[in-house]
Image (cartoon, rainbow, N blue to C red; front, side):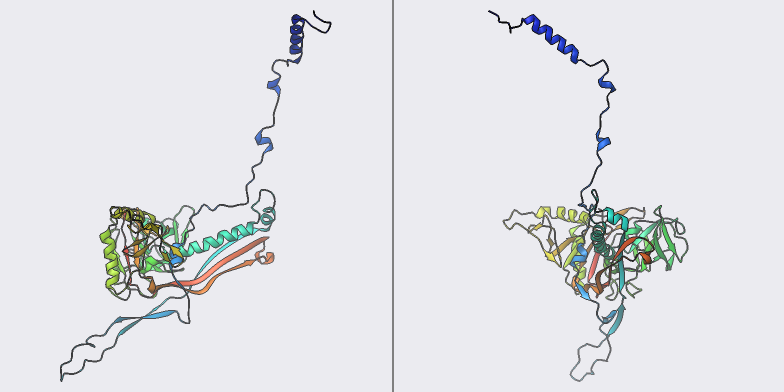
Length: 437
């Protein structure tokens, strides 16, 4: 029996309908509303950690030994034993005619390489606020320190010659891969320009070469280094005169130190160059064996093979057939402060070739064709016992916070190194060039 508190089903439904009608909004109510969105209330901030997206490997620099400059700027080479000073003597025969050895003076002055940076005082203050990098000066200082060593490594691996791709005067002429060949202040010669040379001043905003002290460049002429403003490069050292480069005979090629002649086969100034006149070909084991043999014929014992990643991959594929599944595992070889890539004793991933460590450097430069196209990286076979980086002033850091001197509210810093790459003998090195990538 229903009580007074009970309600009928009909009454319940009627009450629910009244409540629903009272809660309904007018038509179009929600369309008239506005809401805060992400763009209205959110400002992106960035962590203080800065990730460097650049390749900072400096392997060639790391493998070379560093020595103090010493009291002199040069060294001597004995390039001739003297004619007939040694010969058989019969029982009553005369002794050999006295002759003397030939001595050649080689010298190179210290080179200065500098890396500077700066931040404004206002940016330094604001970098400590939310969203800042924490310390702009410290971040730039760390980046400049890496850039400085990277610049040294790149200068040591600049190529010694390249080709003019567009004729013209300064600001019009174009040079293939000029930034991988020259640095500001370098003196450049050319097969048409002659050895009188020009002074390279860099690239303009349109990537045209700017220079002073010479005439127009000619399309297709080979441009080569006559004197470096910075460190002498490995490719400057491993060159020859009268070599066919990209189809052009370069009678007087790149100079090195105070030596103006680079005669092939001479102990004084020419290394071995295995070229192909600007026509690309694949790296082969016979080419690599020949380069090693030529260095040994000159009385050296190669201890480093240097190449780019493209040639390393090709060498690995050449040796793949020699892969053996042995229980020795992987190994690396230390050269100076650098290690080779991991390799196995079977030779598939190469750490050594014929017992010589293989060092891979991304800054290794290559050759080019007469059609203005870059080829793959060169392969260098070296005896580094005859090569050193002589340091006149080790890498140092200075900064300046004198606003009056700068005439601006800025903080400035500078890294600098003074030294030079010395190849005590040039003929203890060989180069395989004109290789496909």
